[in-house]
Structures are given as C-alpha cells and as structure tokens.
Image (cartoon, one colour):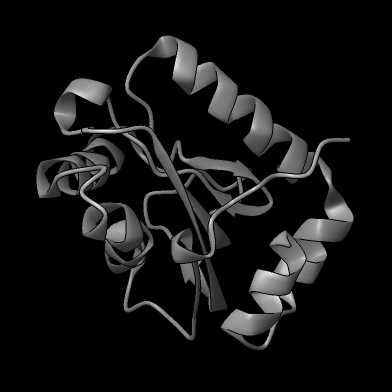
Length: 148
C-alpha cells in the first residue's frame, strides 16, 4: 500500500476544539496560511454541514471537511489535524458516527485532482493501524513521525 505523503506544514496536533465549526477552522489553518484556500472556502465547509448535516464523517473517527472548488480553492491541498479530544457534531443521525478526532481538510481544484486526493485519503483510512496510531499520538512530533 502506498504511504500518504503529507508535508509537515500541513500536519497539526491539537488538544481540543470548542465545537465542530472550530475544528474545521483549525483544520483549514495550514491551507489558509499557504493561501491554497480562502476564508470563503472555510465558511463554505461550515455552511454545507449546517445545511446537509455531518456528511464529512467518512469513517469512524475521521472527518473530511471540503467544499466545492469554486467556493475558494486557489491551489490543490490537503491538511491533517488530529485532536486529542473527540469533536462532536450535532444533528447527527443516531445510527451514524457523530464524532471525529482526525480531520483531513481537502482542497481540490477540479474533479481529477479531487479523485487523486480521495484515493490517497481512502488508502490512509483503510489503514486501521495508522488511524489508531494517529489517534493515540501525544504530540505533533509523534504525529509527524507517522507520516515520515
């Protein structure tokens, strides 16, 4: 299985988020700092969840915040944020997971880059050992080591 290569600048380890909206803003921060996305994109991700529910919960403990490219993507990008404390979503259907610790923020310019990024992400998510290791990290350094 191919390892997912994520630049250290896009990997964050955080203690907690006040709520899911805060978690999305935090997870988007590296992409925002590098101007790969705009603040409009961050707000679009939040608005989408408010309107559609927590569709970004794609696997146990994993959230994939994203919005449409035209909502503020300047350049393709991906950031990974692991929260030490679980982030809970409201309006969740009972049978579906409504929390996450790992936020993989996705910025795709078009459907092709979108699909390539999704392939990388799905290989990461299918790697249960890696997900478990990510969830059990106690520092940003530890998290960086997983991706090296």
